[in-house]
Length: 169
Image 1 (cartoon, rainbow, N blue to C red):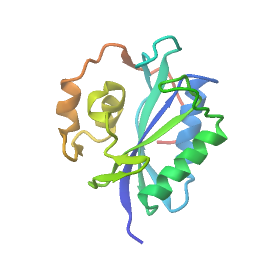
Image 2 (image 1 turned 90 degrees about the horizontal axis):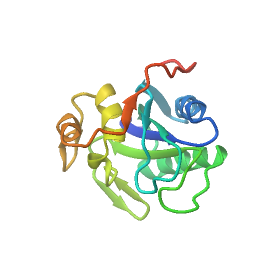
Image 3 (image 1 turned 45 degrees about the horizontal axis):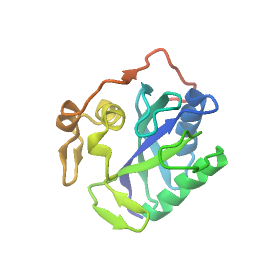
């Protein structure tokens, strides 16, 4: 069974977002055939797309996993559903959003699953926590995550050092 490092984006802006994201770190650590390796700080971010909603709490986790990409996505969707995720419209408020950002250095384009995540290179709320835990990360087909972050608009994103979690790093 081959183990790959995958990076997962976490986000929430409903039902106590800090608890939603920190609880999701624990849920990621409990995924079968997987191990939570690193987790970023929490970041408070302004909503993107649909602006009439609360700010988000975002983070990124690195996991080592033997789950295949589709099995990993299915596990993440099940975690979202268990936390009450409803998909009312694009960019709607949500209890929990989990996205596979990277799966090793693989390029994957399947129905419902694109890796690297298609817009991650444009989003400071993804790149800032990713660079925090993987400063040398390269996004296949896009380049250095740190360089991409420097090119992003970082207004509306703030590292929340005061937001803490009971989940170990």
